[in-house]
Length: 147
Length: 147
DNA sequence: CCATGATAAATTGTATACAATCTATTTTAT
DNA sequence: ATAAAATAGATTGTATACAATTTATCATGG
Image (tube, rainbow over all chains, first blue to last red):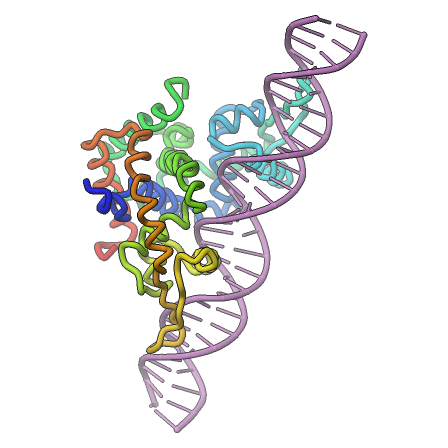
């Protein structure tokens, strides 16, 4: 590919990911609005429903977000009553994040979301598999095998 | 898949796209910093280098961005001297965006960026092709064939 | 023991994103 | 021709993202 062609928007590697990511996210909004959650709050809760009693740092590694994003977001989730944060007992610098009973109640309400999304994203099962595999490979290329 | 499993972070359709998009974008930052551009400013210029003398609306459709994002962004690009905006002659509501000679000079500097990015993203040509095709299909599912 | 460096989270500052609304202008229906 | 509807951008308000810095706490070497 010539340099000139490489600058065409459609040939950018980044752009389709950027757009699809935004457009898929947008599909979540009406569903998440019913739960009074933003998209980032939702994936944060997904991570916590799966495993809580974790530090902000660990949560950030799983979500690929830093404290600049997570600190205010966790503050809001705590205000809504879905999580609590406690200082680490062994290490006073850490904040340990746990899901409250209210937070687990919300999980029940969220159970139907994935299938709703799947319905409006026209991806076959095998295509999704290919995508997952390639995305995993790209992230590995960035971070190595541990992630 | 059971509902429970469907809520696992790794099974979310959105999440890999969201993360990969962010991580690829992050790879652009050091390269774009040399041009004093943000990522969104960069893709906006890509679109304009390809075709300028366009309205904000058309630009927004190509970039999947609305005026709330584009208005302040175009203002910054104009301040930097890379574009100019003029009221439409036929339709006074429109703003016509054009690239300045300075803006085209910047394009020369940007020519090396795509290959630099390709080097740090571990995607084979055929994998990229598959991804492009699937992403195109997903967007078509959202918007129909015109987009 | 204590100064120094390292680390976790919070804070600051900048730049998106985007829904919702507003304003100016154009189009349309009568 | 003109009031109503539609459209293009701008504005407002909220919520990310993230680099860079700061603060509090912990670990470590002398």
